[in-house]
Amino acid sequence: MNPDDTVLQYIDTLRIRPSSRSCYVSVLKHFQATVVDCTSMPNALSKTALREWLVIEVNRLSLGSVLFQIGVIKRYLDWLALRGAAPNPIAALCDQHAGRLTPIVRALVSNDHERALERLRPPPPYGSTLGPVIREHVVRMQSLGLRYETKERDLRASLRSPTGCRRCSVQSRVASHAPFEA
Image (cartoon, rainbow, N blue to C red; front, side):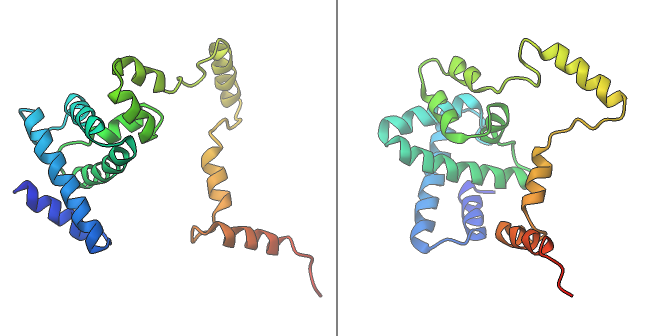
């Protein structure tokens, strides 16, 4: 399939204005043309080709414009990955390095990008000097039947109602604690 056709198919799935549509198309087509020039395999985007594209774009445009473009490109590559194309290297970088795109882009365009990316990598669980002691304690407590889990997921679930609206959830919790009227 022609790369231009896939770009247009992706744009058709979005709900955007015609002016935004032309902007997205130009960003994606420019990215594809540049990546095809940077790599020998046009379907497989590597971190090196992505870095080369970013360096070219940062020299040409402002960092804010490049961040907008990389956001558009990341969503496009996510869409391609869902359709069974090559994996998305931007999503892989976000998974490895704390998930935020702006620091990753800044690290990739820096002179020592490998070291800058390493600094973004989150510490391993129990990564402190007390890590082994805490890990043993957690294993011991789990063996006794205590639940040591990440509470972040439970906290998010408690703040949202089944519809996903936080305000409705807060109102329902307030209503559930209202005094009983006879």
